[in-house]
Image (cartoon, rainbow, N blue to C red):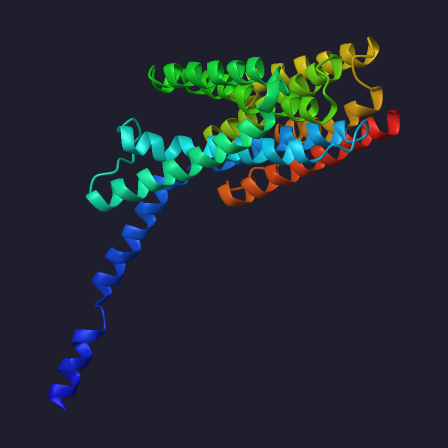
Length: 297
C-alpha cells in the first residue's frame, strides 16, 4: 500500500506544481496576446461600419477580408514585439518564452505582409499608403505620450484611437475604390464614438464611489462638455448634409447612457458588466449607423 501510494504521489502533480503551471500558461498568453481587450472593439467597430456602408455601393468583398486579416495581424503583432524588445511590462525572460514570442512575430508578420501585398499588388489601392502612414503616426504619438506617465494617459488613448479608427475609411476605400466625404465622415464618426466610450469608461472607474448629481458633475464636467460638443457636431454635420440626418440616431444610445450616468442611483461598479454594456453600445452603433446609410440611399 505504501509503495502504491508512493507511485501515485510521483505521477500526480501537487497543488503547488499545478498552480505554477497555470501561472506559466497565463504568462505565456500575456506575452503573446494583446491585453487591451477593449482595443479589439475599437479596431473592429470602425472596420465593420466602413465595410457595411461601402457594401451599399459595391459588393467587392475580398479586399476587405484581406484588410481585416492585415489589420488584426498588425494589431496583434504589437504585443509580442514589445515583449521581445523589453518595452512593455511583460518581458520575455526565458529561452522558451523568447522562442515562442519570436515564432508568433514571424507568423503574424508573414500573414500581415501577404495580405498587404495582395491589396497593394500592381499599384492597387494606392491611398492605403497615406492611410497607413497616418495610423502609424498616431500609434507612434501614443507611444511617446505614454512615456509621460499617468497625466497623459487619456490623451495617449485618444491619439491611439485615431490610428485604430482609420480602419473605417480604409475598409470603405478598398471596397468602393473611393476616398471622399463619406470616408471622412466614417473616420470622424467612429473617432467620436470611440472617444466617448473611452472617456465614459475612465469616468466610471474613477468615480465609482462618487454619489449625487453635483458630485458627479464636479468630477465629470469634461465628459459632460464632451457630450455637448458631440451633440453640436452631429447637428452641424446633419445640417450641412455631411451625413444623413437619420445617422445621428446611431449616437442616441451613447448620449442617453452618458447623461443618465449623472442621475442614476449609486451602485457598485462591476467592471465585467461595464465591459459587456459597452460591447452592446458598439453593436448598436454599428447596426444603426449602417442601417441609416442604407435607408438614406
